[in-house]
Length: 132
Image 1 (cartoon, helix red, strand yellow):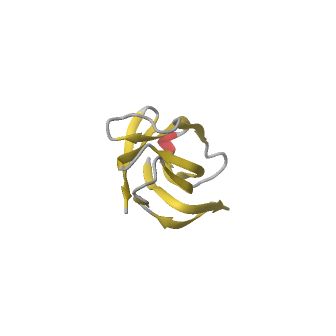
Image 2 (image 1 turned 90 degrees about the vertical axis):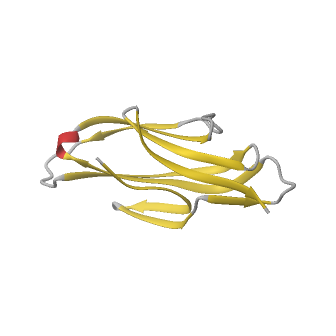
């Protein structure tokens, strides 16, 4: 398994196996007087390449959390089935675009997005929320 893309973006689309990402970011800036801090619209984008030996069911879980591990939104969970069917390709691609509206942070600070596959933490994205 190879996680090729794991990114927070302003927007993204998936069509015909192609991902289009716009404005990948790792920082959010808000006015100093604003609390809580709300990011109105963004997308979490994921592309995973599975090999033939990884055939079968897999679970994915993304958590947007504080650095001490507290969820700021409910975990995003899904299951996928890696199935090659009659394909002679050596890999199976899974693309996902998860649109998140009104992503709310309690205040400025360091956050992260954790991605677990089959219960194992595979990637972490740092996310800084700052005031200007």
